[in-house]
Figure 1 (cartoon, each protein chain N blue to C red):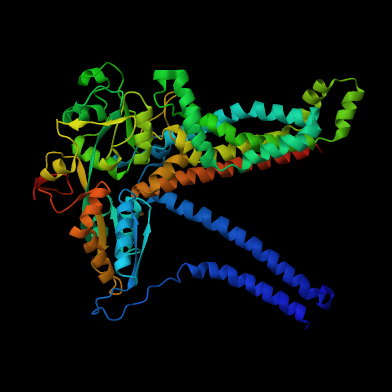
Figure 2 (cartoon, each protein chain N blue to C red; figure 1 turned 30 degrees about the vertical axis):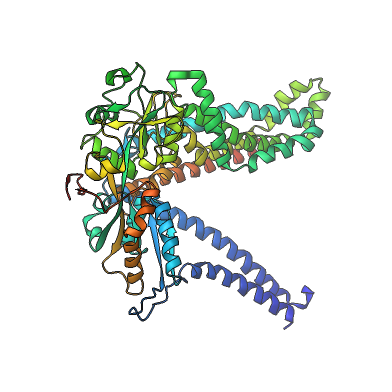
Length: 299
Length: 310
């Protein structure tokens, strides 16, 4: 049917529709960055909060007009790093098993199973964390963790949440390693474990790194589940893993309903959003850098 | 030209219209001016946003009010006191609910033209984990605990054990009320860390019930529950009568802010609704929901927290 239409017109229509889509996405991204930056920078340029004090101040006490974001920055980074540390060995381990050892089982049973985990809403993880992880931490550490809420609980919940992300991406990374590499290794007399360790993992390293960073990005941006289990204490620096703390995202959500628009507190919350935005840009840049390096290494 | 290309053209314009429509939908809901205000039947729709603490009460009032005035619709949104105050200051809603005086959150110039309707009173008091063997604290002891000076139950007459302070989040209306009444202007030192800062009264109750040696504070209507115990303050029980007589000092007004310059199309509805909320007919529901009607108060509190005879 389409042959009834002049070719040039069809081309133009296609071009304008797809172009419009691109323009729309670009517009949304640019507007978003502009808005967050504008509101977030107001704190420093209009309200006169010192940006150094904002980034490195150790106390976030809005009622005293003290806006030091370091407790939340430390909170966000520690839960992100710890959860990655917890999740990574398990994710890579299970990826190796289902790709290298039991591919049939991996495709038929494990993959759907892990995909199910991705689909669970974060509030479910939060409830689970609140009633299971927090009680567990409380039972184990007793007096040292009176409510069980803290960085450790937050990290464990996040580790469970990012596990499927890292596992699925690691599985894809291992599957993408050409079979000739494995066959070459076997031909040299290597065992399966030697092949996996020295050949497969090594050549999949850049993609595995991407998997890790994407997992970290998810952990860094997760709000609800962490907020429920971490304790939400923003006013001063956490001093240990069992200490209740807060993250950038949690502080932002908790604060927004109480801040009146236009107030310094409100702008300071936007500044937290700006930090989050900048951090996710950094994460994405790292992914691109790894991708480029990987492409170079593999020719 | 074939009809196919026309169809494709229609598809494209349809897509463009859909995108444009997204922008239009937001501003399509203008209220119809009622025309004649002289008639007794009220018409119009108003919106009310803000504090969640007495939202259930406002919803009940709205249900009853709309039943009596079928041509009225009231949209009730949550968002917190901060949102309620911002939105009434901008004039984007007709009623802004708040747990605190507008002056404490808004700039003086934003407060101009706002009308403070104090519709009811909420009393708050300290609660502890049921395992704590202390039943009464003086206001000074409470102050010491929430400033981090008193850290063990043995210092206030209980069995030795660490006091675990659970706070509401910074900016919470409940917290502001409690701190105004208890801390009297003093602030906890930077080194003081509560074991948790939670963002709703329901969660406070859960956490206090689950945490040994914990203390926190909630509104009267949250004080019943397994695993928690309400304390008396200076020997005074946290009850409606004691708040009304002025003996119990931890309480605050629930405010419904309106604008002086409200549009004529909605002003009668707003006024009638607030009058209804404060009416004697509705007072029973106010008490039922755990709040205290304005009617019997023998004392009043100003924005600085000073209490005087009404």
